[in-house]
Image (tube, rainbow, N blue to C red; front, side, top):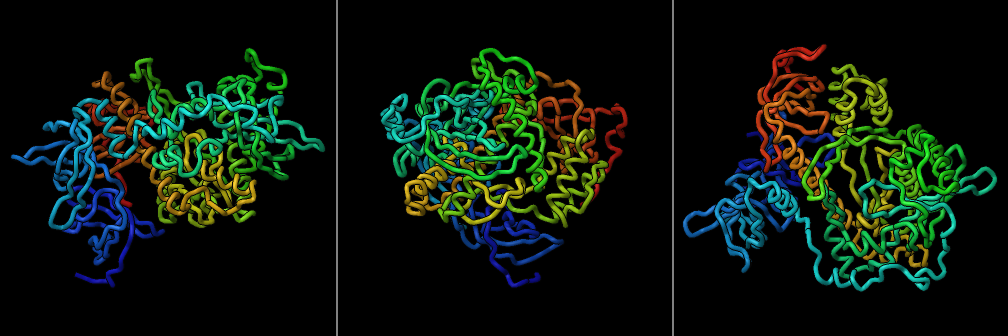
Length: 634
């Protein structure tokens, strides 16, 4: 065995039963492969230190030295009985990850083979497994509804609010009174309105646009003043921090704050006064930002628009009950948004267009269909204005040296960029420059080359996969994807805790307390916590959509589909169905990334949300027959 200094490496562990990976956090370094007795020290998601002791065939190997931080205190799995004893076996960890059941809450009856949630009370050692108390019997693993509950429980996403938070929310007024907005500018006359999805309930941002003289425009981005009601270290604040974000599931929302706030007092509904934080941006018509200003305001929204209604206006069609000044503002906004988009792309931001899907549910909450979301100019309009406000707020706080939680997005890994350039090159999608030497320019060149190409969606998905995850942090740094030197989240304090902290930082600045409280939180710890909660919510949302797709496709077993290869592994090909976005496994298949192939839906695991495909031999036009493509080694 060849030793190489045995350095310690820290990172998050990803368990795979008898082995695990320590996920690399250093650019250019691969993950560390872990196995052996030390695996018993840590559980999936834990942050550990490992000693790297060997490299074999390019793979770094190591053993766990210690656990730095536990990922969670709740574990979900299937109950198994062995004589007088019970164990909870995580489905993704196998018997190796079994946890001893030390007891159960008084209302919980243990049952063989049922999904359950367990609170960990004894951490594992090399000699002894972890142990804990079963706090909830979730149900039958074959029941899709039980599976969804398990998805939430495994990620510690609470579905009920504690009594103290509910009591505090219930004590708040239904609407603000004039005394609440004393001293704030009253924006009751201007054309202020919201633009959201047709099924949205929480309206946390409104916009306005007016002429400011000398050829200038004044854009107003008005955000619900959640910080006025949710005070630092209050029951509502502690619960908001625990959740970190709202979670959006098919036909259901798990809000960060109780409905009294998220759907009521802090939702910018039309024709009622609402307290807001406003970011004013003065711009020229060519999009150049001349200045910005933040102030506490009160608005009365004139209209609740849907994206589709705004698109109708932008396309020159009529929409009922729209005042002339509101219509004029929408049209002017449409022109301004296009100018802002062009300016952002010129500075190096990426124009990603990955497909998005929406599960349409009936009144009973059951999935009825999966629809691909249309990408409308009205979506871009709101996105551009929110991006501009977020940047302006970050610049304001940075200039004033006020501590705040930034949104960081690091540059992509050069090795991954090289792989991407080769993969898409084999599909005929080529950048005009090296992605490694010029990442932003090269990636946008790839996206431009993919526009209108048969593999456009595949290219966009692969570009997104090549990028690193954005995180929250108080450290200075930019946002690669937006080509922004300083960026934060300001526009959604109803549903994102980091935005609430940014609002508090702004209030500190406005009230002359700059830097005094940092939003009432340790910002470094808050950044880690909010980033982790965001990832958990995204995972839960993806799994919920997969479960809904499986329920719909369960009626289609035996049917033939045209699919696109989106990944190739040793087990086979992962094939996406463009109509629904569903992805399934074609075992043993061989084809190039992006290849269009016919597959037959062989089986659907409704509870796990998994699809299995069989190959169909007939070719599509211009397609090489299944099995004649060989996956290249990389």
